[in-house]
Each structure stands twice: as C-alpha cells, then as structure tokens.
Amino acid sequence: MKKIALIISNPIYIRNYILSKSYKDLIENYKLSILFPKELNSIENIYDCKIYNNYFYKYPKILKNLAQFNNDLSLFSNQEKSPDFSFRIKRKFNFKKLSQYKSYKNGYIYRIKVFLKILILNIISKSFLTKYINSLSRIIFNKLSPIQKIVNEDLFDFIICPSSAAGTEEFDISSSTNFLSNNCKTVLLIDNWDNLSSKYVMCFKPNHIAVWGEQTKFHAISIQNILPKNITVIGTPRFAKYKKNIDKKLITNYPKLPENYFLFCGTQTYFDEEKLLSNILKIIKNNFPNYQLIYRPHPWRESFSTKREKISKEIILDPTLNFKSQNIGGLNLPNLDLYNYIISNSKLIIGGTTSMVVESSIFRKPYLLVAYDDGNPIQSPYECFIRREHQKLTPLLNNVEICFEYEEINNKMNNLISKKIPKNDKVLDFIISNECEKYSKNLLNLISKLDK
Image (tube, rainbow, N blue to C red; front, side, top):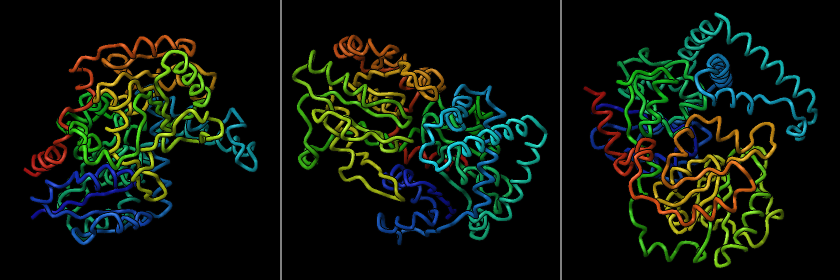
C-alpha cells in the first residue's frame, strides 16, 4: 500500500480537513500519516491519534524567515500579475500612519524599519539576485527541512498539503518537488478562493494543485503560471455539509435565534463596523420593526477588535460563533455545522468581502456587500472590494448587490430584501464546484489519477 503524508500546518486546517474527514476515502487505498507542527500537539486531544502514524516537526527560524523573504520578493516583483498584490503591499508594509502602530513603544523607529524593508525589497526584486536567492533557498531547505527529512526517511509516495499558497510548508514542499526520494509527488490543496490571487506568486510549483472552482483554476493559470494539466477542481471540504438538511433533532440543542433577523458578518480587514452597525440598526427599527440584528464578528479580525461597549445592547452577538467551537493553537474555530443554521434562517445578510459571500450564495440568501469609501487610507471597504481579484465576479452573483455609497444602505436593503433569487447560478458554479459534498471522493480520484 502506497504512503501519503498529509501536512496540517495551521489550526484552521484541522477543522477544514481533519474534523471534516476529508481523507476518509483515501485511507481505503493508501496508508496515511499526518504531520503537524509541534505547537499543534494538542491535536492529540481532538481525534484518535492511534489510527494513523503522526509526526510533529519544527522549522528552524532561519527557514521561516527565508520562506517569508522569498515570498516578499515575489510579491514586489509580480505586482502587475494581480491588483491584489499592490494592495497587499499597501496593507502589509504601510508606514504612513503612526496611529496604526501605537502599540509599539517607539512608532517612529518602526516606521523607519518598514521604509527600509520596502526599499530593500524593491531593489532586490528588480535585480538578478531574486533567482539566485530562490535557488540558494531551495538548497538550504533541502539540507535543513524537517519535513523533507521525514519524507525521505519514510519513503512517502505523496505529500498532500492544505495551503494558502503563502506559508513555510508550502514553500518547502513546492521547492522540494522532483528532488524527493521515491519520486514522491507533491500536491497542494488550495484552501480559499483568494489564495492564488491575493498572496504571492509561488516561487516554486508543486506537481499538482487542487482548487475550489474554475475561477481559482483561472487564477492558477494566469497568475501562478501553472499548467492546466497540473490543476484539478475538487471544491472545498468546508462546504461538504451545506447541501444537507439540518437535523431537526440537533436544532433543539443549538443556541436559540430570533424568529426574524438580519445577519451582519464582520470582515477580517479592519474598518469602522461599529458605525455601520448603528446605522443598520436604525434602518431596521424604522423599516423592519419585527426584525432584529445579529452581529457575527470575524473570528480573526486583524489589528483592531470591536468592543462590546461600543455596540448597542439591542444588537445580538451571534450565539453560534462560540457554540461548540474549538480553540486550537490559540485560534478560535467556529463549528462548521452551525453555518447552515445561522445563514439559512436569516432574512438578509450584510457584510464585506469575505467567503460569506459564497456561503450566502450557496444558501440563496440575499447579500448586501458594503463597498463604500469610509476614508480609511489603508484599506477602506471600497478598496477591499475594487482591488481584490477574486471579487471581480461577485457583482454577477444572483443574490448579491454592491453598495458603493454609505447613504444608499437603506435603499439597497429595501431593494434586496424583496429580490427573488433564482435557484441556479452559473457564476456561483464557476466560483465553487457544486460537488463539494463529494470532496473526499474527489480527492481520492485525484490521487489515483496522479498514481498512474
């Protein structure tokens, strides 16, 4: 029986791939081992480790820094490939607003360091040194990588790695392609719809990648320069249960929701959600007095946290967000089983450029995407929409309406709430495979194809 190494590099992949049993069909035909970073050793309390061979690895700091440096060079040298890349630079390497860094003891020193880093990356990324650094990094990873050591010693036939196309593991695995013993094949499972268009152009390519849908496949070809024959659409295990009806017996144990409500979904990128929430609450009171507002903060909101005291007590914090959630590696992971429950029972969903756009489309729920300019010089909702490559098809979805003006939210809500949403959506089918519920079988079919 041939051997597969499944690398779980991030807590979110434990939820999306381990707890979802994305590999259940694979283990009937292959011997599976799972590799975790040492900081995730708490996984032993989450699932039965005795079923599989498990390995725990730790990267030397030099390898983490080297992978990040290569990725940053790629970001600067490939800005023309996607509008997301220049936007990522603007957000990641911003040094203009001292107030953004008030948590640092000396904000001015921090700004100088960021400025120098931008200058160095700009110079090197435009020179012949980039290819030299890539090649040298590949050699260093080959000598020091704990994952390559495990794979070569145990003679694995496949490495499968859930991926954002941005981490140390992805860089390591892709750089090792065609250099591993036993002709081991490398496969990346792209975890989200924006990963190939918003992170970096990968310095090295794996043997194969699996993606959400045709849109992500297009990004792999046009942005990542991956050949079509090395890309397969298989969906995502996150949505595997979405087409199944909610078990009525389970609902009795779920947190109780209002009979009528609007759902506001927060975003990971910061903007003034408190101001928008207050406005939406006022609109609901004036126009939809029988409805309530539920606020679902993004579990990993960056930089700033929404403070409860700033939000009206009339706004309900999503009771499903922490219900049977798991904290793994310091990351709170909402229970995927409750996404159907909170989304499908809402009358209207309001939010930014998150994957909730896709999830609301799957459930055929109207989604008002806020994309107005709030004056934030770094990442206003407008820029978060207009400069995101993966959002180009969003306005064409049957259930979505874009709001470019803050003053138009009232009218947009009224228009969208009465909109009839067709059952079929060809744009949605292009963004995400409609066979996500068969993810485990799709993954087996892909590995079997590569095994020939």
